[in-house]
Length: 209
Image (cartoon, rainbow, N blue to C red; front, side, top):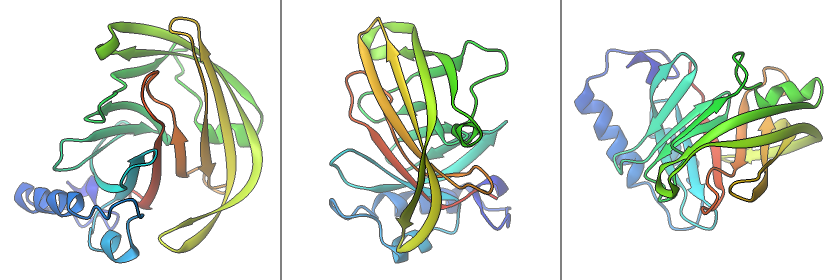
């Protein structure tokens, strides 16, 4: 459980952990964003998420498996991220079942676009649509410097846009990532994860580690 805490305090019981999870779920504040006080009450790595136009809620980091970060809540919502990119979701209504790269080296992180534009090809599964191995061709590029405000604090970032298209289904979109220029950490993102679902907006309140 030490992976859940930004202070690496660890040794937290499962009962205490799920108490925090329940607290995170009840922190919903209508269509307003989570407040600094609500986020500070969660002493673990956490992020705020919402589907476009809905409430913002908190997810807490449960596991870090080889760089795949699993964020969850008592409401049985799960978002798995890798380098800030969503690779799997559960409980959003329209879920991304799996995302993999066609390249054995894996997908470049969004931060790679700070050095140069890059192209990638990924395969995605959507169980509810009975679609598996959907091929998406993507191009990522640096847009420029932008400041984001999270919990009232301004953070200097570089915005990266990643435009993707698929033929079957006919689907095209652009996801955006706000990346720390010094360490490549993705502080905020707006990502399209399902052909029939709204974008998912994420902002990190307390980073892992």
